[in-house]
Length: 489
Image 1 (cartoon, rainbow, N blue to C red):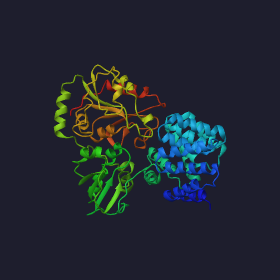
Image 2: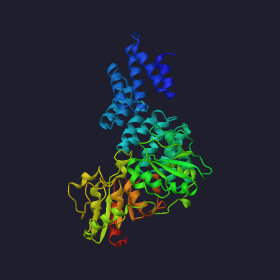
Image 3: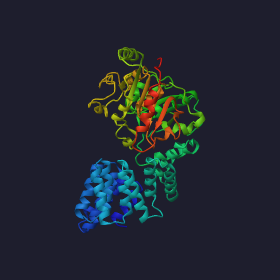
Image 4: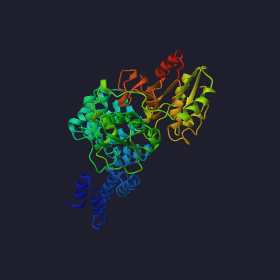
């Protein structure tokens, strides 16, 4: 077997270092023709992409294309790397160049559709996936999987489910397809199957999780055992699911939490956690570990057994008094916190976050709005606003610690309004009335066709009727704001 064939074989087995050696042998072979060297560079581009070394991946692809410009595979794959580097226009151009060379190149059409999905060009993305399927209709798992994802973003859930299930039928080992299927299943309140399917996320290439030298908890008695829960995914997920530490404590465990640094201070005094360890530090040895978002599976959570004893987070009393004094100086019948922008690195932030100007539809003389936005998104306040704003300032949470001032302020408000962000989860965990603006394709935890949240009894959900149009949401909120009464803190 030659260097490239052997390298590709072991590359697919995950033996990246050995595969790289095989590719380098080809490049160092003075007798190898130029086209073979270009292919070796292309394989290196794939390898570096798989390792998350995107700059090296791009260099490898560029070298391959420079050696052999008529190389649609390298052009198509380079598009994925450019997309990972957030160079979207260049990524689209690279895919289109591959398609120009090879119009029936199914993989290039799928890659182009995936890139267009990431930036919200859903109609164009769906057309790309359908084009891909027209060239390779029988066993095109990536096209079916990604078409399902794009249809989900459009709120076309039954069509999305059909394509996702077809992807799994083609390739039962596709972790990404199973994860997509899990989110659709959980959206439809089928927790029995959804939690099991959601475990496939650990096999997805984009999941980076810590490893521990002790066993994962898979059920059984926790009495007298130490359990290390660890965070995964976003800060909002940790705020949402930290409630499961309480169930573990009740089961008799000594509970430790491997915590994102930004949440350590907020969680430090939770009575059901024995020890908080920042994820920047090594965790002590325990009897078991458990990823936080696997807890619903382990504790067999169903709709009727969602743990929703709220509040489970309490603000710092000193900060509460400080902000209570500040809020007492603000005018207005209602004091309403607002947050509009989530983490911009979130895959679907383009869909879930609100432009600040959308909230201006809620303007009312008797309402004082308190911005709770920290960091990215605050710049949208700079252009002025029709809202009656009392701004706690850019230094919120700087001296006190992440979320500390925010929690204290929220605890004194009549209402919090915003998009699906960590601050919204915090408001729900504090048991403060909270209104959430949801897109046509909400995160699975908000489910479908309901205006309440079984996870947070103080929440009310407002749903888009049409992708990208928030007018129905703001009109419903505006009507209710006229009749809502101030809360007694």
